[in-house]
Amino acid sequence: RLQSTLKRIGVNAIPAIEEVNIFKDDVVIQFTNPKVQASIAANTWVVSGTPQTKKLQDILPGII
Image (cartoon, rainbow, N blue to C red):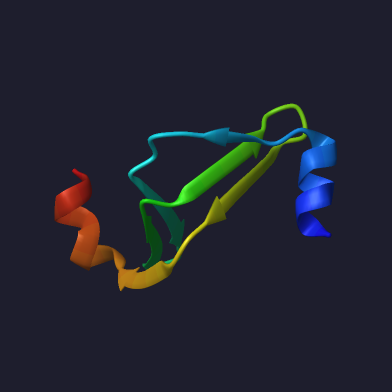
């Protein structure tokens, strides 16, 4: 049902994304090699994969 709704609003796969980091307070939700889909017109992004929750200070040196 979700996939049919995403198809209806026109999401497309975005290839070659190696990492997605979602920052929330002092925590980072990190996806390595995720499947990313987006519909810019619908302001919709989909990130699929296995998340890891890490503290911001643990990954900060690797981001900068």
